[in-house]
Image (spheres, rainbow, N blue to C red):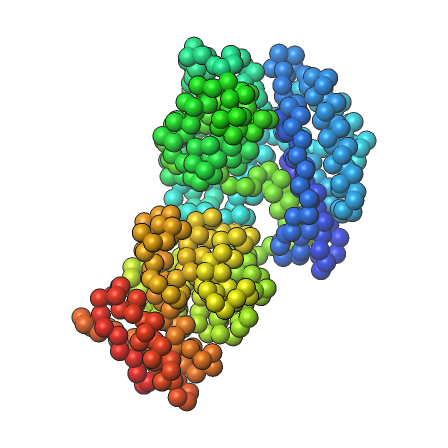
Length: 517
């Protein structure tokens, strides 16, 4: 199989100093997906269009070894429609990757030639290359945790697994079994029987037993699974309303799927009609993979092969892609640039909050990650003014929670929104504030501490004059003393700090004193 690196080294990406329009098509075994993006020379992306067609290229392939006539026609019709979309957006770069169905079908070459005549040049890639591109998409989407992680992508014809340690690939494997192929092989009744379930589990045990032989003996046991497919997205919605879910939660949802027929899954469980006939099989496959990997929780991410293809094209087209940390900062700055009415004030508050953080870090037991969150939240704390001064902290919470922030975990966005919410007004309380209560326990503690720091720093620029230039902190058993370096009279700022610093004093169990050095 070819590598995408081979054909994209000379990607047709025009002038690096102006936006580039890129079309990426994932010709999958179940569905064909198109995304069109406009990207700048630094890798920033704006989605212009998305198209999806469920064509089931792999359906029946296990029996005949070919893409069936109906699926063949449906696939080409979908590509013809996508070619019109691409032409309408005048894309300078067009990429299409074929996966399991085109890797294995005897008539795959005929399909590829027909697609090329439509202006869609399909490159059939190996399972290993598919896994590499998915890892690339994830690594550009979120910061990998330091602990071991497994990436799982359940396609229609194959499943890609990648073990990641500290962001680097430790091992990967492509299993020639995806949702459609498993469903075709299992041939369950509607509704399925207990015998169907036993037969499917037996089949999966054999698949995973063989897979173990193809892997290194020493692999890091993942603490988290990141899922990147539509199947796992549907399972996350059903098992945990789209949030991370445990094997226990998936087991309960799988039981509900197996106790209903396809129509009942649509009517009672809200399953997408396009997956209603096979999602019960996908649930057992995903559950078996979770158990095989040691039952860590699974989190769905809305990225996959298409996004990996786009990053590959940008890289080989000469774009200067900055590190993820820089793109995270850019996400915050872009949001602030649109909505912050007083960036000088917000940046000054962020600087003072950072000085408080560094002084109190040993007592708050916070690290570099929390320091970054503080900087981001302080930068955004006043964006609610763009809606109204009254209740601007609540408006700010809404704006952050509903913003598109590339590079951030959803939980991080929720945390930042709560720090913005509680930079003024009542202190956070799990009984009174539902969104705060929904955070993980440790994140609730972090919000209290970061909100207290932003409150204090905001008070020290009460009149938005940046009169308080710097500060230092002294802490003894009873008192938090804050010494200010200031220009001119800052009595209003000190009085505001005595008031808004109350949460800081409560968390430290100390009284507050503030004075000019």
